[in-house]
Length: 185
View 1 (tube, helix red, strand yellow):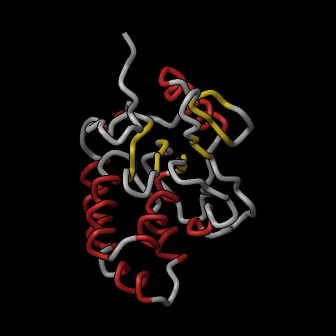
View 2 (cartoon, helix red, strand yellow):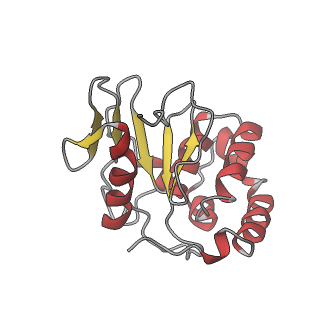
């Protein structure tokens, strides 16, 4: 018996285990758990263990690594892409800027990168709701996001919600199941 494809449109669950989460179905974003606590100067990139975990979690659903950054699902041609990190100090908002994506493709990102994609693609109220769902499962480097918000309407509208999201995230990190979760090694 085959397991249902977690990335298909008719699958209700967004949970793909403790370390892999469907951050946004509409935007086709997968988040790989990074850490519980951040410093605003932390590098924001998928580590080797994070990449290996995503590949291992998607393998039972027919996804095979076809290059260092692409997993492809046999038979459907659906892809899960891990965009390349370009420069030290680069904005997490830019992670997908130079990565071509076909309709039906997914991005595999850090929680912070996933949150940035949501901020850029959604109205502020929707972005806050979606990121709130994300931070209770995969904490986000909210200070790094604050440092990289630009003076454009979508970012300015989101800026006011950072205090609320920091509170929600702090409560989640101090509670189970997050409190005992550790970074992948």
